[in-house]
Image 1 (tube, rainbow, N blue to C red):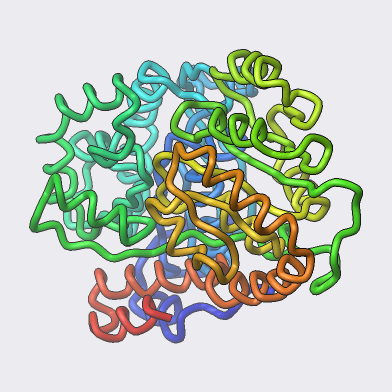
Image 2 (cartoon, rainbow, N blue to C red):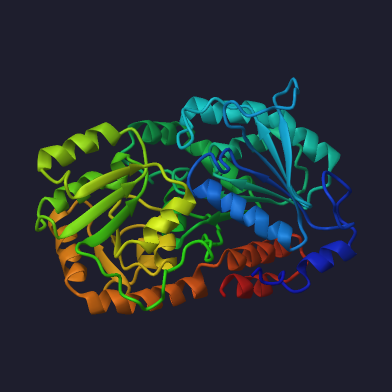
Length: 433
């Protein structure tokens, strides 16, 4: 159930008469937000899911939210010459999709991201000229933040949410990304300076951003989880199976460390541990080949890309979650596993330690260390009572820390601060909850 809006926030905006009638059934003077993200379900990964969840919660609290995002190839454009499609997802939530040339559902590529920018400029400019927005909220400093110089923003507050790959130094294993950041770093600094507030998804990402811009002021607001979808089958009940069932969810790319999991499985007793890998990506064929080469293909199953509903079902049928990436910002899949009550084996990097307390609700290991991964799997796999005790503990942790309603309230508090409708100290108090 959605929690109420931040007390006085939407109501105070309404009383000030901000906003005009627009695309949906709207309350006069409601807080109006323009959200820009080149990814939105079904396109993209965690950031797309996050922007959709936030937009839905903000609209449920009475805000008017317009989203400009990419259109999946083949989507109907209603015959418009500009390729723009418009869908009202709720009375006060409207989705505008523009043409883009992505590589696929989960891969935009530089050309796909650039084509979104070209298509989004006229759509966003038209909306900004038609409506008086209170806040423009941008997901990803790059590529989406590159829209800023082309938009008639005036004095409208601009919030830029950092997601990971848009921060220089985040993925040093990706040579193309490293080169792009080296060329665009001055532009990234400009975007952050131009923003009214920069919002990294975790503290470690904010610290990394300060390596590029040492004086950067930021506010951390984490992601949430759909707590109704991701839940234990029966809190506190042990799962009974002949094998310890482990689940990994992530794109099949180098930095996710899937190859390290396969090497760890080669060190485990045969027929004792079962691994299911959910996700697709450019390393799919190479990883399947490695599994055969290591002789673990009988204990490892590649499920391919799954819907979130299918991932949630896999979580309820698993005994633990295992993923040891080399880089991770917030890590939606870790939060979802925790909400489902699963013990977690993860890397001791990025925001993962902010979600997983080593020894309490999981085990943290150095990325790339197959021996440590195998040891952690055996430690939890051989202790049924410990795994069972973690189920309720992780669920309670998720309910306390990982609600999308809480994230929406924190963003509303931030908007209120930037609009001068609540003191900064009051907004910070809400953000700290």
